Structures are given as C-alpha cells and as structure tokens.
Image (cartoon, rainbow, N blue to C red; front, side, top):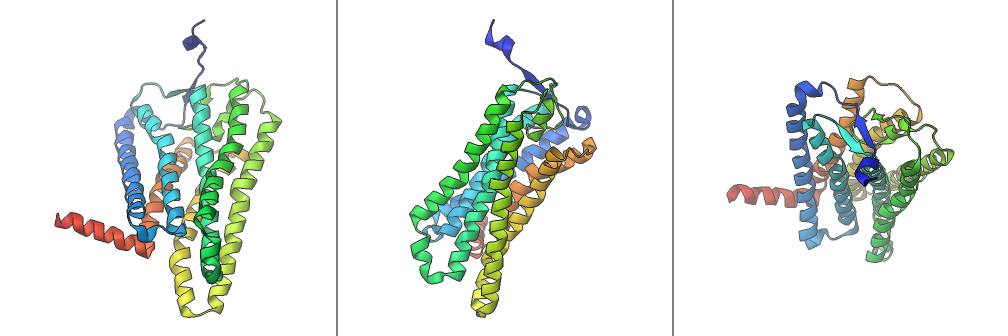
Length: 308
C-alpha cells in the first residue's frame, strides 16, 4: 500500500463560527503573528548588536524572546492555514510534533526564568562573586539545560503518544496540546506518570525556586541601602511580571487536561487564544519598557527611524 493511504488525519473542532468569521480570524491572527515576530526580533537584535548588553541578564532575556518566536512559529502558520481551509485537519505525526514543540518550549520558559532569577540573586546578594559565578561557561550551561531537559522529557511523552492506539479522531482544540489524550482508546500509565514528572521538574519546582530566590532578594534588598533596593526593583519586577503571566496561562492548560474540567467552546477558544497571543507579545513589551538599558537603545532606534 502507498504511504499516503496509511496517513491518519485528525480534525480540530475548537473553532467558533469559523464559516462566518474566517477572514476576520485570519487577519487578526496574521497581524498578531507579525507583531510577535517584529517586537521580539527587534529587542533580540538590540541585545545582539550592542556589546554593552552582552551580560548574563540580557543574554537570558534574548533567549526568552527567541523561545517566544519559536513557540509562536510552532502554532501560527498552521493556525492561519486552518482559518482559510474548508477542513481543519492535521496528520497524526504532525500533531505529535506540534505537541512536542508546544510543551518543550513552554517548559523551557520556566527554566529560563529560573536561570534569570538565579542571575539576579547572585548579582544583588553576592555582587563581589558575580563575575566568578556567572561566567560565560555558566551561562552557556544554563541555556543548554533550559532547552535540553524539557526537550528530552517531552520527547519521551511524544514517543509514547506516537505509538498509542487512538479510537477518536476529533480534537477539541485549535492546535495539538493535551487534548490529544482524549483520542486514546486507553491512556497508558507511563504517559500519565511522565506527564506528572514533566509538570514537577519543569514547572512546579522551577516556580518554587524562583519564588524562593526573589524572596531572598527582597529580604536582602530591604536590609540594604536605597541603591540596592532600586536595582532590585528595576531588574526583578519585569521577571516577576513575566512569571505571573506564564503561570496564569499555563495553569489553565494544566487544569483543563489533568482535572478534565469542562469549559464551553467559546470560553475554551478565548483562553487558548490568550496563551498564543498575550504571552509572546507580553515579553518584549515588558522588557522593552521596564529594562532601562534596552528601553534606552529602543528609544534611540525609534528616534533615528523618525528622523530618516
């Protein structure tokens, strides 16, 4: 038999009134995707071009912005194609890959935020030891672990999903995430255990580490002078805002999948769109406005553009 006859197709059923608003959906999401690419890329380029920003804190910010671009590119092109298609379908293998990239890059976000929290802790609480601890090799190792560890763990789940027998062929969402579990005839125990392990290792433990680290920074900064408090507020506040955004949006995905909570289709679509719209746009806005050095170079770039 030809391979084309052995391909399994899955259907997305999470769209609302797509036949009426397909062009509106496409236009809005296309504009959002362009904004995500442009806003993240501009700040990424600013950090790359200016040597004064080649410090661990800004390197981690650049990595976070690159992660947002990759995360969005995993979702948006297929989403835009679906808006204009008569049938919203995806092959099983492509769905498994989208699942892998979605959770791998999503988990990397928490680990990158953990690395940034550690960097701020060393900078504020151990300033004399900062050049020794946060060397280039340390930064490289932290970046490698932030992307590699989630990828390896999620890859194990993706491998299991690839070989699990499915009895249903309709996904309740608009892209492949945990909703793929609802297609299985029987959910393997190993998959559930690995899912809990991923949640613990790449989300809950990093979040606890971040909260503990910033609590220590808060205590030490208030015991120190006003300069230390000002530095802590300027550099830690953007990271905390991004953490809150990431945690809020991730919690919905976890509750929906793990607790099997029912949401009306319209509410589910709105929450899903928030994950793919707000978060990738939120990072460059926060770091572009709140980080003094990035904001300075950004304003200079915009002023030069106006003069030309």
